[in-house]
Image (cartoon, rainbow over all chains, first blue to last red; front, side, top):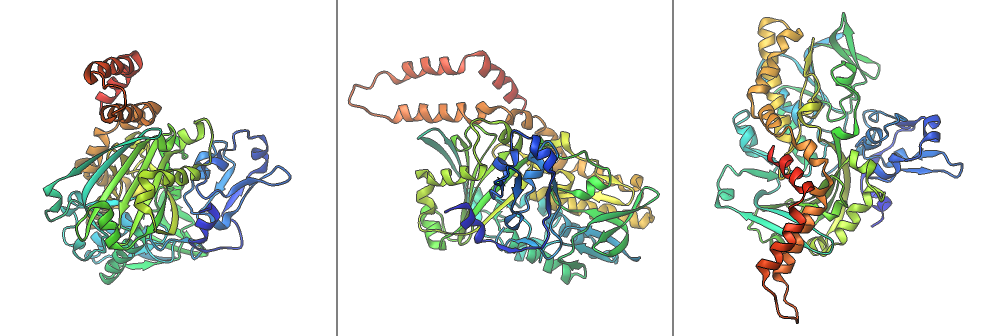
Amino acid sequence: MKITEKLALDAFKNDKESHIKLNQEICRTCRERFCIYACPANLYSLNERGEMVVEFAGCLECGTCMVACIYGSVQWNYPRGEYGVQYRYG
Amino acid sequence: MEKVDVIIVGGGLAGLSCAYELSDSGMTILVLERGDFSGSKNVTGGRLYLRPILKYLPEVWKGAPFERHVTKERITFMGKGNSTTFELYSDRFQEEPYPSYTLLRAKFDRWFSDLVSEKGVFVIPQKRVDDLIKEDGRVIGVRTGDEEIGADCIVAADGILSFLSEKAGLRSPFQPEQFAVGFKEIIQLDSRTIEDRFGLGEGEGAAQLFIGSLTRGRMGGGFLYTNRESLSLGLVIGIESLNHMEPREEVYRLLDEFKERPEIKNLIKGGEIVEYSAHLLAEGGIHYMPKLYTDGMLLVGDAAGLGLNMLVTVRGMEYAIVSGVLAGRTIKRAKERNDFSAASLSEYERLLNESFILQEMKSFQHVPSLLSNPRLFSKYPQLICDLFEKLMWVDEEPKGRIYQSKIEELKRQLFNWETFKDWLQFRKI
């Protein structure tokens, strides 16, 4: 099963605004791209302009990206109450 | 600003245990939970060991929605194309109170929160706490959205990524070596199939840990727990080693590869994935623990860095529960003195020191440095598997003298400087 199909099994309520913000100036100078390899939901990728983007709608709220990014580009907060993933098993 | 006696931020096991302990105190207790209900943001591998917590909360667990009591423990060493499993069965696993139960947090924490609510605690869901309110360096309340609420004491039970402990100046910024990421699937199977496949009686459960090639040398391993009608199957990988291991691979792919192994494939056959989840775990041990209290505030559970990888057992939920109870006891005594200063709340640290929690964390203080050794996750599991496979293998050629040939090879593999150093390190555990 593809990772996107796995995420589609989870219950999400998505806020309009992302709870993850990236500092593009830092991302531009990053070579390792820790976030791409660390996110268990595979939400990080480079867009056609070569900028790092994150698809916050499928976020499992683990915070791995924030910890893995040692350059401090990932500004991460919990989604506001009511929003984000709602686990039914956990 | 409205004011209550105690605000507990986070309605997980630590927060709810603290609330439960305080529920008979006559104080007004408010639990703020960011999810739709308690447990909706929580994830476990996992299982709860009951014995350590019975002394602290003896009656609570009678009606708890546990999944299965574990009667079978397995540890699997995985090599490239082979694996060796050790299995423990003991009559003691069948004696009540059962030593451990598998559970699912969305069900379990929700039940616990209902129980705590019935005892008069206010558990308010969908409330994310955004900030602490301080006065003269003392924590006096919290801000949630546009609202401000004050309290004599704030309990930060806001989980492994405790932003509150950071805002209170109790911890340093998060570092990769402090954490591992766990991610898992819930795979639905009917209970009869689970019991047949794992050789279990009705209501009995199995717990299986995996170490070796599945993480490709990265610090971590796999886990498989049987629930009533599902399996929890996942991996845990240290973030530091994830950042540095070559060749690089997106971490989520490791679980897909693991599921393709015949050892796993046949256990999950016909099962339907119903959920995919991820969460961080504390891996830093006692050296990375934050300061546990300040004026008007205490840290409990994951927020306090209370989690431990003990190699073959992984602990966290018992620590959460018992630290919550001990924080509750501390607050009751502070209330008697009407003193919620850091000096008064320091009793919490003393209670934790006397409990099994900090004693275990001290005993296993060398584990994190041991776990940074990649040979533990590659060379040694492979060696065990290859040795066992050679013993079992019968070929068309005459089988040579096993003892002599194996001893020669083992000497070559194990009697070297590198292994000697590993052994010295291992002896500290």
